[in-house]
Length: 42
Image 1 (cartoon, rainbow, N blue to C red):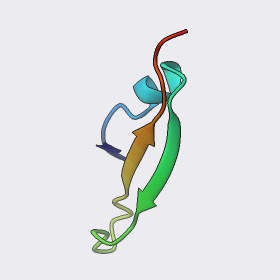
Image 2 (image 1 turned 120 degrees about the vertical axis):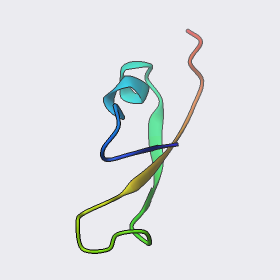
Image 3 (image 1 turned 135 degrees about the vertical axis):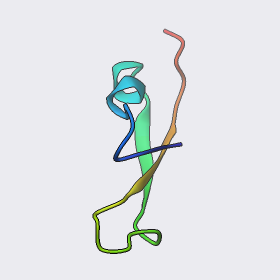
């Protein structure tokens, strides 16, 4: 898991896929929690 204020691009660099975006904690500031999944092995 990561959020929009963190280095979420790192997970995509590892070829992981974003499987969920959670906007439930957004209090008007655009805060989004991301969940990533996938295999990091080639």
